[in-house]
Image 1 (cartoon, helix red, strand yellow):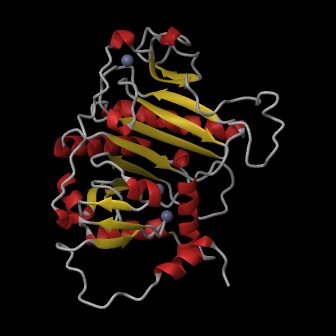
Image 2 (cartoon, rainbow, N blue to C red):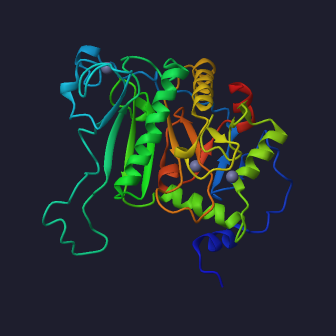
Image 3 (tube, helix red, strand yellow):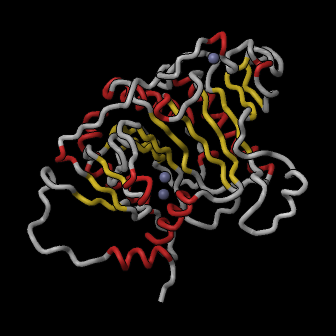
Length: 355
Ligand SMILES: [Zn+2]
Ligand SMILES: [Zn+2]
Ligand SMILES: [Zn+2]
């Protein structure tokens, strides 16, 4: 007997269907299972409960004279880890940068050797929070929303994502590099100035763990890729496509967890974001997609993150992607307590609106 959690879950989930008529999608809630994670989402569109943003995205109102991330205020942050500067312009911790990376002033993980005492762990479940907490200042311009940043600047930001992942990998202390962008106070952004964050985690985060498991489960012992399948199916049906370019597909996933969830996936099978050779095209597409989110949905707060292969090794199947999660409904006890998401907008309708 297979003792894996996933096998147990499959067994428990494969209950015979209840007798009665099949659900009328428009009137009754529907269960959808994500093809990668096998997690069930409740699609409840018939409740007349349309989502609305809890507030304008830019509820963080901070004048630029107080902003530690603005050019000229470099002395208000810890010394920079690195920066991209135009040829011959500016020096370290001085203006003239395009993208600037600094240690998080309030790190949740600390770099370097753990403090004496913490090192002498009494239990394998307790250790120093060693890792990296970095802030990537996306642009020198204080109040640019992500869609206003433009493809050129977005490209420089993506190149910095790539470079930092490579640097964290080389340092060799972290197992996974998680890159996020929080936009708007409701999406947990605490400073107005556009910035992303990178966490070098000393463990594989649970979400990535579940995804890695899903890739193996879909094609045990073979080289198949469930996300490559999803790209093909999504394009064939077409009703969940937001935008398609030569090398990327932007779409709403079949089992979208929240209204207007969007994924950007490279068409070419690839484990790692940092190996992506089409960053200029990705920058164009991201800018266009985020513009549509802004124009069609009225400036919702959102989070996006890069889901990537762990930093070391290459032995397992995976396919990197970016997930965008607008925050138009609030998570409650069902979501937080049971990990069950309730989505009130069908992904097919969401894509039609975002196209
Ligand atoms: Zn600023
Ligand atoms: Zn693939
Ligand atoms: Zn993912």
